Image 1 (cartoon, rainbow over the protein chains, first blue to last red):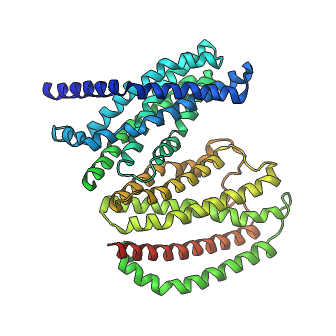
Image 2 (image 1 turned 30 degrees about the vertical axis):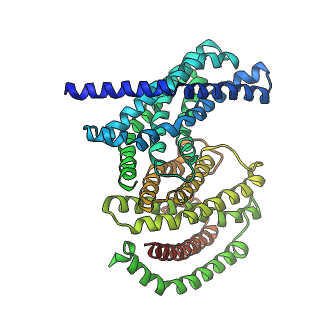
Image 3 (image 1 turned 90 degrees about the horizontal axis):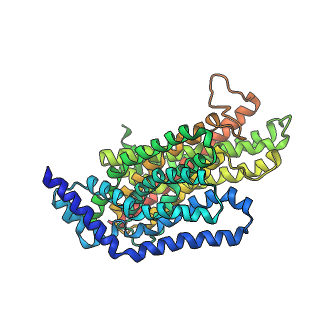
Length: 224
Length: 232
């Protein structure tokens, strides 16, 4: 049992190492995020009242778009280098691998966005109270986004023709997430009911993601 | 007896027999339905003649949902019981559903302009149907994008099951949210809230659309079986 947990810790350490090597990739994502906020502001105009209304929606949709940027390296490098099979031979089921991947994606890809959200909120003139709500909704929503990323990246493992289909799948499935997490920020009086719905979506996806990704990884490994 | 639902050879045999009668029957039903809906049915007291869009809009919406439902059933069957015929049906039927969804959306927005004053509103029913259309498009694209057929079929089937969350949302969206779209008026079979002079043409048109959809589906499934046999 101790052996099993130490394996998981070693795996996380490896994820940390690989994400440190690819650190510039993460910075590119952050730069994309900030630059697209600037572009939105240039195109809408810098009127403070308009930005206050539209800012939350802009930031949330850009978070979604920039999290789809890193989909390519979700499973692909591990799959091509054979690490997925190695881990499976070490006693990890594919379901567990998918779950670990979701958590490590949450830590190493989404947390930097969590840190940069308050800075982005300053640009679009959002009040302090709403920033806190935004952070709460993003913590739950980004876990769901990691699950969605796992689903679409594992679906696209053997897809060599059009890879952008993966981000379309994430965007279609993330519609309820966007609706409810923007709803939390804009309707503070119905905070509790909306956050319960968001938690419900999160639990549904945590339940189905390992099963789903495991099916797709298994198919890809069998047929590669 | 019902082997033709799951066996390609039996299906081919049946299809050879019923394709031609089905074609004539569907043309006949369509003509009857068009005559009923364009000449014999009355105008609405509020909407005037625009109500006749309903005879296109409702059957195509019903077929869009029915097609997806059939695909869900076949995906579950084929994944759970390893029936490859389900995969054939999935890839053959998806474009039909997409076309019916497109007809539904376009006729709906043509109907919405004179009645609601706008081509499109973002309420629950319209948005969920638009998402259904995007789902169909993704399924079609998925069918094109994999080189390995086994992987492609299974991934498409799994995605169809994942997307089936949308079906109850479409069906009950008019009950759950306050929408501009009117609530269901013919699915309550005990007491439909539509007059029989309009209900009868509508039912004939639904029957005709079903036959047309079935006819195209049979031809597409036959073609798909031939293509796969050639490849194998």
